[in-house]
Image (cartoon, rainbow, N blue to C red; front, top):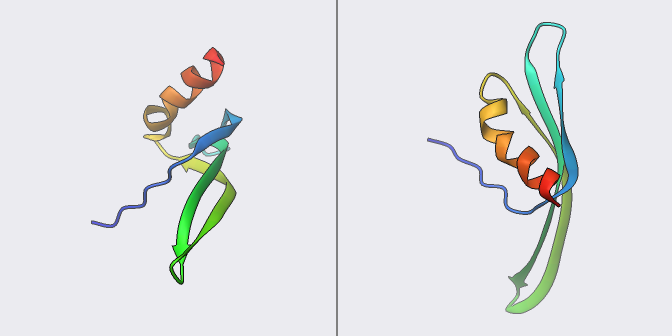
Length: 72
């Protein structure tokens, strides 16, 4: 099974939309900061990406994001 793990902090509050065909989408921005080693030297890594979760499972997988953001 292929698997991708994204780890970071939700930067922009999640928003929900629905396509004309009724497919649910959840959009949010994710920030990632870490330290990587390259040629045995540490370097800081930073990336901010837009994430879109689509389909029937979108609400299930992103439900906690909405609750976490509303508590901040």
